[in-house]
Length: 219
Image (cartoon, rainbow, N blue to C red):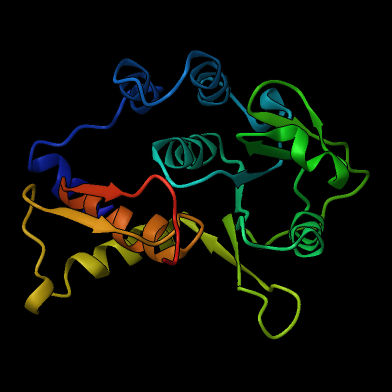
């Protein structure tokens, strides 16, 4: 709360519902069908209204990834980043263990083998008879790389995201962050906490700009 109060005192204002999506659409970064999908989620009044309990994001780097992440946050829907390099068995493990019933992807039909049926150009859904309970306040589940076994989930709250961004902004030294002046280039994938939480919320809280590559490639 203190962080938000400071940003508002500095001239920031809460974004209107759908504002990020509108800007992306007007600037040609989001096509109409996907913008409408994001708007449907943002304008929902409850999790029941959007028929989603756990939302997985399987997109390449770009503004659309963050729009869906913020839209899920706005609606109180648990967000589950799905790394593109995971094998089909690892993806199934993530989706099943997190209880994901809704999936956002540039090609939803590609994941039909995991039990999801496309509902439009960017969304696929499935019915689950039972969804595992999560600790109170959970709004995101991130998974480890799975190099030593099956990927392991880590449950995060939005309070953690804000605290992590604020901590990053206050580190000082060679990476001192100046309010409203910084442009931070992050080549890491958005399914990684460094790009989608640490640096993103640092820029969001300090009025900066995060420059994100369209597609992550180790080379």
